[in-house]
Image 1 (tube, one colour):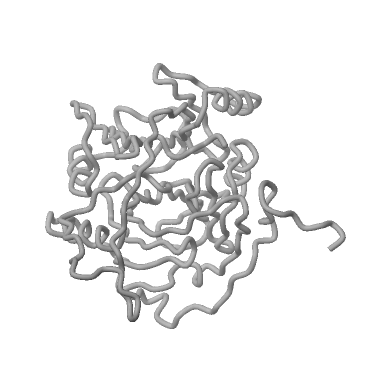
Image 2 (cartoon, rainbow, N blue to C red):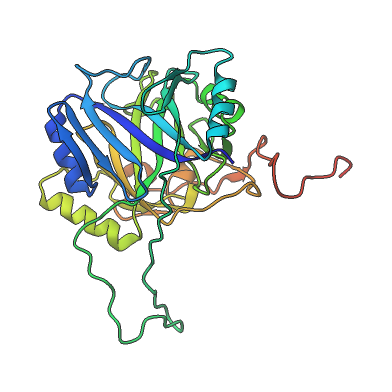
Length: 334
């Protein structure tokens, strides 16, 4: 185990004040604000930094447009940090700053960092008992009434890359990430070795020919994890009451990761996503290969035109997905 999650993300935006107001309404706890921007700190101690792209660009970032320009991964021990830094330094510059962040640029042009993260907090979010026919778990007690969402941490980042295989191979070979699933010709989903999230980076194909995918490296979204569907809906309602644009897809559940989702247009770039109830994985998981349409959604409350006729049931195991660590390996003679 080494990388244990997303320690911080650095947004670079063209409207600092509007971006800060959005994230306050979205439910992120404001830690500090000055003339140049703001820092939010989530309950698990992950940070979200907001700064101007015009006056405070991220060195080395090749991302086009506003959005997250640097991802800093938290590392469990100082020894593992030094091991990863030494591995990276064989073929690229690694710059260590006063906060202990070791900055580098990943293959494909995404600025990243590594930092020893002893401050990471384990969050325990109790879920409400659920009643179903013949299975009564909540008697004479009503469900909690939630006024708004309060995200607990950052589950994953979505980026649009012209070289999805190059970036995913870099993360797997140099930082020990695991392949989680593939969305055939459209996306690769990878996770850090020290977490059980389904994925920590969704790498979308910039050459897929869909809106917003023009062949260049761009930011797509951040998934902020909440407890359940109730919290997600409360957050959605609060944002709409505050005057923010509605989600284009509304509420749904992906087939890939099984996760509930609600994406919102974000003034800081791309989309901000409430996520909940995702699959949890370890090294016994065998990655799957989905057709693009089949993997998008199990259901959506506001069905888009491109899914009106449904999707052909098309999923198999990924050819390169047999685990190399953990679990029982196939015998070579079988």
